[in-house]
Structures are given as C-alpha cells and as structure tokens.
Image 1: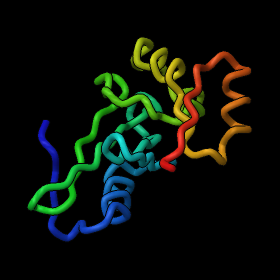
Image 2 (image 1 turned 45 degrees about the vertical axis):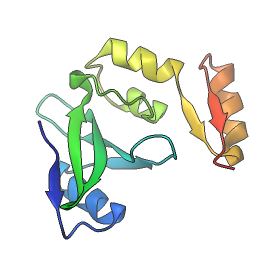
Image 3 (image 1 turned 60 degrees about the vertical axis):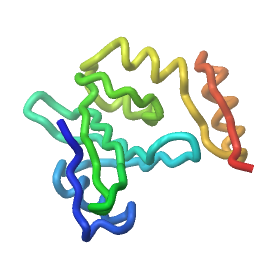
Length: 130
C-alpha cells in the first residue's frame, strides 16, 4: 500500500490529527528521533478488539503523508510503547518479542524509566540527540 499525502498537511500535528480521526484512535504516541521517520503509534478499535496501528510519516513534494500498518502486518518499526502491548490482543507474537527486546527510551531524562524497564528484563537503549 502506498502513502497517502495531502498538501494541507504541512505539520506533523496535522497528520496526527487526521490519522487519529480516521482510525478513531483511543490513544496515540508520536515517536520522533534523528535516525528514523516519525512514527505515530495508536490503539484503535476493530471488529476483533483493540489493535496497535503504526503510522509512518513521510514527506514529499506533495506535502506530508503517512502509511499505516497494523501489528498483524509486522511493521518494521519497533518503537511502540511497551504498555500498548498489554492493552491489546496479540496479533503478531514475533513482532512483540522484538519490541520488548529493543525498547527505546528517548532522551536522557528517562533514565528512571530505562532502569525500570531494564529491571523488568528489557534491553533498553537510552540515547540523547546531544
């Protein structure tokens, strides 16, 4: 599936608003870092219960856009908030294992969270853009 673009989406916030309305998101988390595209993680309702949706924000001459992937499609991004895994039914166990092995805690201000996750058995990477 290709990305959906709109010239009116000139900020990440406008894309976030659009996908939240489109997917009727119950929760969302925007993950930004210097090394990969911005990702909007959502918990969205479906006929079979709540699901995790990964929206990759892309840019082109046509403005900003996004591509959406549900957990069952094995999105090749693993920055999903770990607590989202507890709030939704398992759709792809292999993807969830990778998410938990590669929990990324951005910024240096989250050392307390990083320690907590590490104590729980996660391999936590704490990085800073500095």
